[in-house]
Length: 128
Image (cartoon, rainbow, N blue to C red; front, side, top):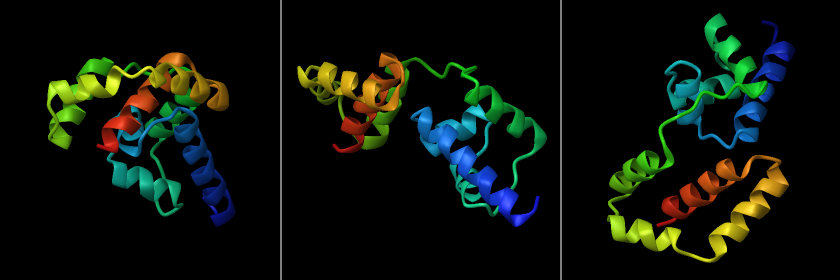
């Protein structure tokens, strides 16, 4: 790829990932097990994706999103990583503002409510 084409594709990949509300590691996993570092290099225009990964980007962009692990499994893993207990996670989730925040994110990003809840909860866990 030429530099301009590579830069446009890098921006396209980043925009698809951000539109889906995915972290780089999640996006890389959805592309077939690529690392967050690889996604960072692709988004900065320093690395190309293989044909299979390019096809996966197109599927994600078209809305053919592969289902990841259930939300509770994601939160359990995040809680372990953050050194939190189940009770601390429950406190984050039992908050009346959660629904309002998720609705606002869904409206602004144009994503479904499930994705919006995932974004809000991950943000809360990350900030603990």
